[in-house]
Length: 58
Image (cartoon, rainbow, N blue to C red; front, side, top):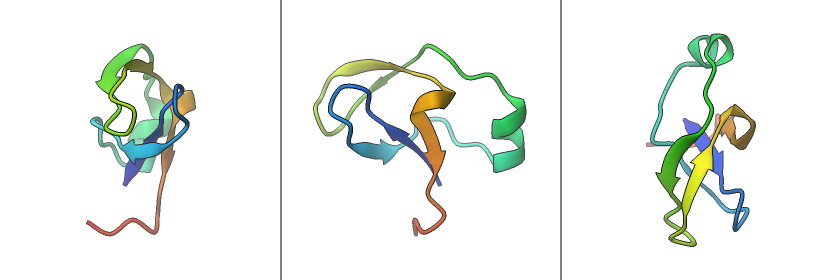
């Protein structure tokens, strides 16, 4: 599961963009708008804010 670490509150949430790891590595993701469900702030996210949580169960 692709996750985002909010640059404002530093808490993680499920990314609104879901890609497999190969596609993620070959893509350029930057300046995507999202709303953090933790701090409720509108944020801009990029690949540097995203990571895979392999232990996440849907």
